[in-house]
Image (cartoon, rainbow, N blue to C red):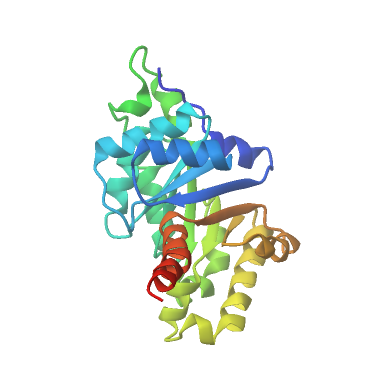
Length: 264
């Protein structure tokens, strides 16, 4: 029987910190290994970047549930309603939405993912899918409450989104934001390496505004020495690296150097 428990929501409601990592593939063994070795609170599947099928996403969620961890999916902007509704019906605990620039776009997204009920004023129906369990199914309003427990997170990664961060964070239903320096710098015609102080100032502004509005800012880090800076800013939610970046780092350093040594 599928459980309605949302592990990520429970941690956020309790005011506890969260730590996750990003996964590029849907192989359940990768999910099991990451949780078992890293002890993560949840895993994030990067549907924006990687290929996948819907049955594979179900198995990814099952692997997370089996090991007591939550699950998040990062979706593209253009097909976000389809993928987010399918992912929610499969049992993902959280959706990370990309490329939003203003509060109206955020409201539209929330409208399409929230249940169609006077209590929640959304557009999402009662899907006959894994989320409902098998027998007995939850009552309609039990399901609506379960649907509403989805954690809704938004990337703040465009210059316009940073300008509109106050309005975005005031939209009811926004649970979490994450600043994206690469897209932000590109939207300003910058290379991030040449404008580190500028994009860090924008990131700190987004963190400050989010906290002031009761929204959890999540930050992505790649080394332990980055944690202290964000903790001093009030951040409690961390994304630790990315599966593909971890592999590339090993290949580019250990792999390339091994090749160079053996060619001497």
